[in-house]
Amino acid sequence: MKILVTGAAGFIGSHVALYLLARGDDVVGLDNLNDYYDPNLKRARLERIKAFSECTLDDGIYPEICARSAHRGHFTFHKIDLADRPAMADLFAAEGFDRVVHLAAQAGVRYSIDNPFAYVDSNITGFLTVLEGCRHHGVGHLVYASTSSAYGANTHIPFSVSEPADHPVAFYGATKRANELMAHSYSHLFGLPTTGLRFFTVYGPWGRPDMALFKFTKAILDDQPIEVFNYGHHKRDFTYIDDIVQGVVAALDHVAEGDPDWDSEKPAPDRSKAPWRIFNIGNEQPVELMHYIGLLEEQLGKKAEKILLPLQPGDVPDTYADVSSLVEATGYRPDTPVDEGVRRFVAWYRAYYNA
Picture 1 (cartoon, rainbow, N blue to C red):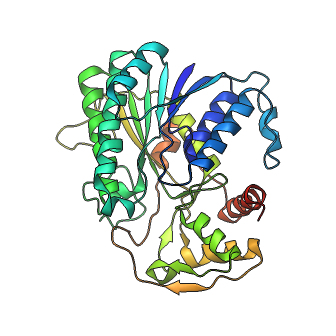
Picture 2 (cartoon, rainbow, N blue to C red):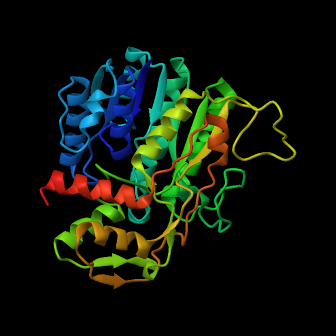
């Protein structure tokens, strides 16, 4: 297939692009390469994808990746901002995508508090350009990134897609919940199959510098203190990047269908009579932040100096995914232990930064 991957220079997008290329799909990558974090890291991810598509990848961390497939798909890249309506319309018209994996977004819970318009431009207007492109050009399935932040004030854990998610506590989560509702309207009106994936705290090699594991690693190696919010007591369902990727692709391959038994008197929040689904992708094994830091200290061989602070505005105390509907629909269940995931991240970080 020919598949559009938006956010291809991003953490998750670059890994998804590699996976799809490895199985022989042609991938068109899109990213605006903004400076929310180091654009050089984004360019390095793109170079890695390009090297793999040309069978020259040898990054010293995952040498087996070039052996995954005898036939690699073709990769092309477009630097486009999602909110650029003419450019997005031209891209969809020219390429004729079979399916779309939409991972580009303005990320970050705390950044959304001070920069809300960036989230409207990227996550609302940008998502609409993707929906319009899919609608007008016969895309067979749109899979897009949502977030565990959509659960917001819900404290009933594990978080289940069978329960409402209508009280986000951060604007970032609100924009992602809006995406789910926008997608439903297009699935209902135009029969566009859409699947939203609520990711739970993704980590791993080639990760984002604004995420905790990346920030902690850099600070510890630089002999700097780390800020530990909620005094280290909150739990996160840390989900390794390979598990996220396989969940994304499994969802992509199982095209959303309408549920003929959906009851409007008792409406299930994760499905519809329209071809629209919502799934969680999480590890189902919440880990206390202090334990996570301990695993990192063990891999680095250094203790962290910790500054203990209260919970930040917009954060939730705990996250915990119920992935039973994902397993039922696709047969895939994330399973990478957090200690193994942290080990792989540290190996990548040391190699990439010569640390």
